[in-house]
Length: 266
Image (cartoon, rainbow, N blue to C red; front, side, top):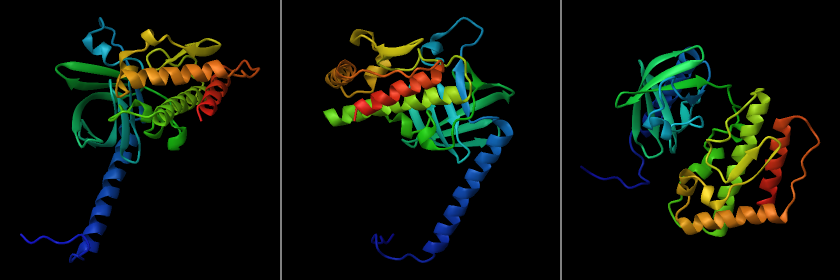
């Protein structure tokens, strides 16, 4: 078959593009329709079943989430962070990630505040509905923008890149605490999120290096980069003093604290 150069105008190209755009808009519209009809909120958190915890509970924990946006995009962390596009066909949820790999999950029940998904090998995962995050990606703690830190490095990173990864991590915490405060969530999970940060009732500090989770370490290209990150964040806490606001609002307290750490990391 003949090959065409990249600059040659193909017959019917405008028509093909128009049809393609219409198809994309149609699929996005169908996804939004399904979201409104079957998913009361785009955001769901994994919860442990009432049965004895299984090996799945070492991969999925209270920090595992699935966000299905009305525009047909999604983010997910089921042990590793993925993002891409979603579609619902009957009772099957199709998630096509950034690597063009499609996962198919069968929805067993969706209603009220719970959702049951058949994942694989007889595993049924239970999820609980969560308050809708902001429509603005920059304010959504579960958006791709605020979770770049979860994407493992594919090359050895320099100090500026590691610093940016840490800053993005604290941007996540800022929006996460703000989301919890805005929705009056009395107790948001802080223990299952991979982080060097250790959260207390009235502030936060840093974990010892040997206490960092395997998942947090996996985000870095190698052990040296992970140690460099640890050195950077410890230097930030050592050289700077967080000015905690005089407030009884815990959400406001934590948001202010992490905002200051973000500033220190610049």
